[in-house]
Image (cartoon, rainbow over the protein chains, first blue to last red):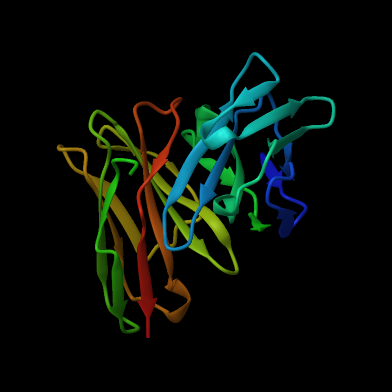
Length: 116
Length: 112
C-alpha cells in the first residue's frame, strides 16, 4: 500500500536561513510525489511534483524538492526562508490508477514557522 | 486562486441533519475529488468522479454520497450528521486522472 510519512510535526527556521521539510514514502511501482502548502483558512496550494526525470524538482515560490530513490525520500527545500513561508506543508503520493483513480495519499503535515 | 470554487464556505448544522456541499471544477477539468480534513484523521480521500462517473472510493461513510453532473460540477451529500463529521471538506479537480490536482478553498462544516 502507498504511504507517506512526515517525521516532523513542526520545523522552526530563522528568516534568511535554508529550510528543509522532510518526507519519506512507500510505494509499489514508480512514485508520483507532490508537495502542497496550506495557509490558515485557505485551501491547499500546489507547490511541485515529481513524476519522472531529474531528481531535483523546482516549484513555486522558490521551493524545490529532491527525490532520492535509495532513501525513499522527497524532501522539500528552500535556500532562504521568508516569514511568509510560515504555513502547513503536506507531502503526498498518488495512488495507482488501476484501482485508486489517482487519489492523493497525504502525510500528516509539517507546520513550518519562520521567525524574523 | 486555483479556479476551483466551493460553496458554502461555512456550514453550521445540528446532529441528524443533512447538508449538500457544492464544487465547481476548473474550466476544462473532467476529474473531481473530495477530501476530508480533520484534526484526528488528517487529510483523507473520500471519492472521485471522472466525467460524470465514479472512479474511486476511499474511506467514505455510507451516510455520505456524491455525484458529478453533466456540467461537471459535483455535490457531496452528508446525511444523519454526527458531531464527528465536523471537518473541512475540500474539492479538487484535474484535467485527467494523471494531472495535478488543484484544490478549492474548502467548506468548513460544524455539527452541533
